[in-house]
Each structure stands twice: as C-alpha cells, then as structure tokens.
Amino acid sequence: MNNLLNSEARYSEFVHRVCRYIERHLKESPTLADLSAHTGLSPYHLHRVFKRVMGITPKQYAEACRLRTLKEHLRNGSDVSSALYAAGYGSSSRLYERANREMGMTPATYRRGGQGMRISYTIINCPLGQLLIAATERGLCAVHFGSTRAECEALLRREYPAAEIIRDDRRLRYWVTALQNYFQGRDFAPQLSLDLHATAFQQRVWEALRKIPYGETRSYSEVARAIGQPKAARAVARACATNPVPIVIPCHRVIRNDGSLGGYGGGIARKKKLLQQEQKRSSKSGKRV
Image 1 (cartoon, rainbow, N blue to C red):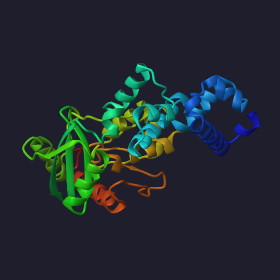
Image 2: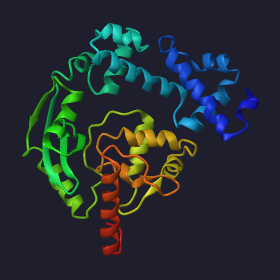
Image 3: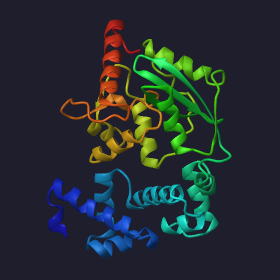
Image 4: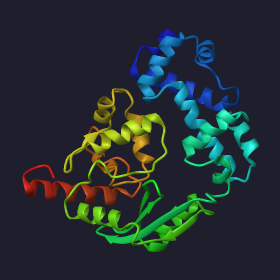
C-alpha cells in the first residue's frame, strides 16, 4: 500500500477508494481503525493522506455522506426511523439530535418537506435576470438566480414543499438594499446574518470566500491553501458548488489555476458578468470597494 502513495495521482486514487468504502459501509460506521485494517495503511498516515486530499477527515466525510443519504431517503418517502438506519445514524436520541443540528431542523420536519418552517422570500430584477432572496428568522438562507420569477420560486419550493413559504418584500427590504448596493459596486458588510447549515469544511471554505476582496479572484488551490488544506482544491470546488447564497458568499470569485472560470450554479455566463462588473468598478475606483 505504501507504494500506492508515491505520486499525487495515487494519493487521489487511494482516497477515492477509501471514500467508496465509507459510502458502502455507512451502516457499520467504520472507524479509522477499520479503514486502516481495510487499506493496510496506518491510522495516522491514512488520516493525514485523506485530509490532505479531501480537506476533511474520514469521519467528517462519513457524516456528510450520512446526511446526504438521510435526506435522500426522507425525500423518497421513507419513515424517519428507516431513513436514520439506512444512513447509519442508528436510533439513539444523540444521533437524532446530530441530524437535527446538521439539517437545521428535525428529520421529521425535513421528511414533511419543511412542514412547520417559515421562510420569507422576495424576488428582484437584477442585471443577471431574476434573483430570489429567502430568509428564516435567523438570517439569509437562500439566493437563487432564474430567468423568470416562477423558476426562482420553484427552486425554493422544491427543497421545502411543505414549509410555510411566503412572499414578504417588506421583511426582506434590508437584504434587497444590500444586493442592490452590490450591483451598484459595493461589497457586503461582513456582519450580515446568515442561516446556513454546513459541514465544518464547508464553513471554513465559505468564510475564506467572504474574505476575497471585491474585484479580485482566487484559484481553488489558493483557497485550499488559505484554509490550511493545500491539497483540497477539489473539495473546495465542491464546497463552492454547494454554496446556498451566491453573491453574498462570493463563490464566483474562485476560478481555476489556468485562469478559466470553472463551474457556477447560476451558469458560467452569470459568473463571467459578475467578475467583469466587479473588476470594472474596482478599476474605476482605483481601490478596493
């Protein structure tokens, strides 16, 4: 197994195999010792190599897989107990509470499509089309681009079909102003309240994105180095792709090492326009906005 780790490509190959093993054995909740026995690599080296490539530990990866599996089963109509078991959570109250904390609601509420939740939203015209802004009582929870208002609303309701989702232009006036100011050339204040549910790794990436100055870009590799995980560029890209509040958390400011734009949930054309707008306004002002 040590010979397998002689190159960067083999690092990735090795970790890919470990990820697949974790995914196949979620119910057994494999420990680091289990993974070590399966791969033949010492727990210390396995943990180091995995974190170097993925940016998170094997345990954190397993937790993210459990949450994804839980949500898939709940969406497909499984009862909560079956979904928890299928995802490897077991049935203890401690694990139920962990799922609740990571999802921002109880699994039962999620299974009911967010029933009992109250989400306010508004939709504004912006230079890139229609923009939906949604928030809970705790802060902003979603920003969606769309060609039409109906498309924007559908994206929000798809995730929470049973939640109380109401249009409330007045309640979200503060956020509307903040976004309108952005399109006029001003960046967001760092203290703006957000209500986001993420893994520890996603949180670190998103915090790093918010530190990228208006008008500037960073590569996925540079962001990985900024969070202390220089080999986790691909994991950074995945964290960018799962960002629920684009623009506010400026994942559009992250590009590939060769200068190409990479991906963007709102579409590459929007990413290009956002960067052009920021760079144009920043160069006109001659300073950071």
